[in-house]
Length: 193
Image 1 (cartoon, helix red, strand yellow):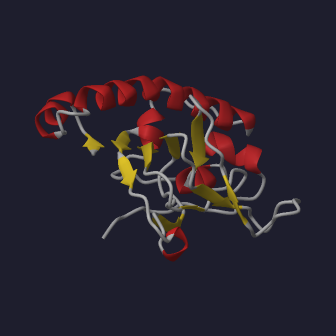
Image 2 (cartoon, one colour):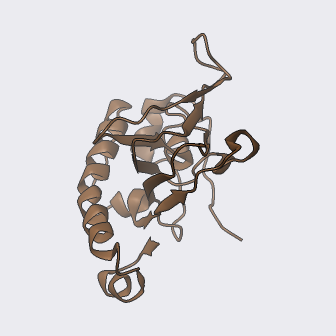
């Protein structure tokens, strides 16, 4: 369900979850803003009000339901992928099934392997996505992930995708260039065809 405005959500979203989803989406906006301020502040970049829509101007919420599967090793809930937005905020139930791939360039024993992110009651998973990797000049890495089904219980997850305004030209802001040494990722245009 993509959020554009309250009126559209009230008319088109399923009645069973509409009010809760709207409240969850609205309360998440300030959290996403604070997360971005902290992450970008950590690399010396400032996020001012005039630029906020460029980072999180559009929000989408999914309500995912994964049925049990008698042979979960023969199916995948969601294939491996990277999220192309800025940040993903995930609320998952206590079942589990979310895995991330440990990047090859980290100094860890399990690099290149898939590891499960265990569910913690009341916790949110914050996923760095492609756009934040680009804006941070590669200092933050987008997380490759996959979802597996289980044979014991159905699984529910509710991700919020905070994404950039797709109608703006995306670039590193001049104030940031000095702080990022050499730009690894230069200006680019984003377009869905």
